[in-house]
Length: 313
Image (cartoon, rainbow, N blue to C red; front, side, top):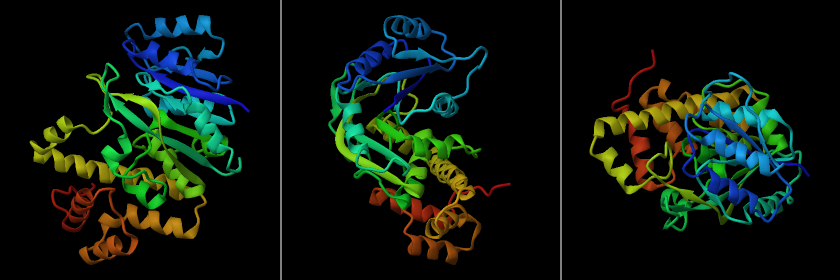
């Protein structure tokens, strides 16, 4: 069994060594770590080279003059670099718990290798000094973990740093030219729910570090307050998410979907093109929603009223 761990770095000198050490301390030791740097200007490359020199399982794969690809394309390059049976995605600033890899591989053994599979875990949200802020990111942020296509179309609960996919799922993405996608973890979850299995393990796989340099990260109270104090930007953010999730889902329509799933996706990506009555009918018939009741209410009202909606040119 071949296991590849994929890491894309960018100016990660503050916490990178700690994350690399947590990977080295995994109870399952038979892995290869492939690292691609996306244009760092700090000490990230120096830290990577130090670990590469001391551990033959760690490889730095950058090609000359690749430039900055962005996180999605960087992980796509990593995934397509070398074939494996299973692939784990790693961020540069978290800390993996010791049995993370073993736990997910044990769960994967229950599924056929030809079936596309994504297995993800819960996370403990911590501050930059690893003090626990939330014992469960899933329960604090989303209320429940998604495992179905209907859920993942409109909201993602899969975090890349605790995701593992098999080769069958990897081939679906690496073999496809795609429209812009929101994030690699979200799109892989859509592929898994469309063609195979999306599996959630209700145990933490890592310490998910929140710090002042986080680009994405968990939804914190401060982030929510910042949004609500600027409502005009909040509505723009809502519509941007809806629109980009529709564009992302269009990628699936180029693949050989089952009729029921194709219908579910097609009706979601075209819902804003239709009159009020048809938008209302689709919301009720298909049950498009968010994970929490309040967000479902806002999502539904925006689609029905088109409040602050900007027509595509």
